[in-house]
Length: 473
Image 1 (spheres, rainbow, N blue to C red):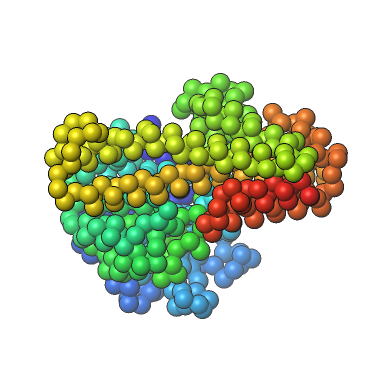
Image 2: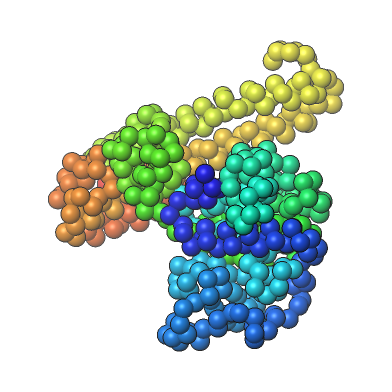
């Protein structure tokens, strides 16, 4: 099983990463990965270097180069003067780019660089693709000497990188609302170290969009002056979630939402899910791999989702609106509490023991440790807040999907095309009793609620306002 098998529905991204991993392996094998070029270098000339230069989408230049197909200058703004190299087959879905001044020591044709930005909608597999690339960079399979590409999936380098125990792969994910300056400085310090295994020091940041402005500026310095063997892999929902100064120094890979068929296939093949259930959850989540796997394996998650899909049928009066809102918020709070009970007690006890306290919650803490315990309590509270927000956001996404299906029927679409087949009766009832313009306003109300939650509006207040708007239509 190659490391790319879990990257679902992204053939162009896999091809780009596999080519970059092969170039990176050549750099390590030949010992030429000594330094990255300076950001102030002039873009190298493409004459005679084997790059096909396209004048535009209709230039008719023939078959594109398998790795690099288009060279064009930036168009002003913060990235002015940066030249982008696009790979794949060109077109809007190629999804790769980056300044040629970052091409690395293998020359102009190398597809390896020191900083990558993985973007794509939630569930597209950004972090999965980044983790697979990190594993391919650390691949130590002896078959490479026989011409096999790196990323076998079986060697010690691949295996430990995929499960998160490789000494030279640091995975950064946060269960808080943001990543601060303190944590980022520690990452920058680590990025300056040489890899323990002699290949690459890889730092994979799954939540780069949660960097504070100060933390992003700290990260920028490390990306501007990279260590010789350090590779940054940043993941964010969209290009706009990264500072212009950071994204202009990264190779961009844009992932798309995989098809429901591809998600169902991986659920059956990797998780042993029955075909009918795999097809149902893949269609219901519209290609979100993580949510589809959770729905397929967690019966309580399916029950909570069914409750959310009944909300439009329970808001006939103001009392029903307020009760539905309270139940949504309470369900999110229960999820957050369940996570807290599972994690907080273990964290607290481990910290108490590390500080020298006796076993048991009632034992006395050593003097001077109150501040550390309060810091942990604050962190746990922030984590609980984020968990509640994330759970509510998933519920709102399901609710928006319900009204999208209503709109599909109202515009004459077939009932076979709706995503929430298990709620078909309710969808048909709402579709026949309302007009398309009402449905559009209801979808807007759901989206407005999501924005309000992002702006720290009290959850119950935001959800109550939404349910009242849904009733009004």
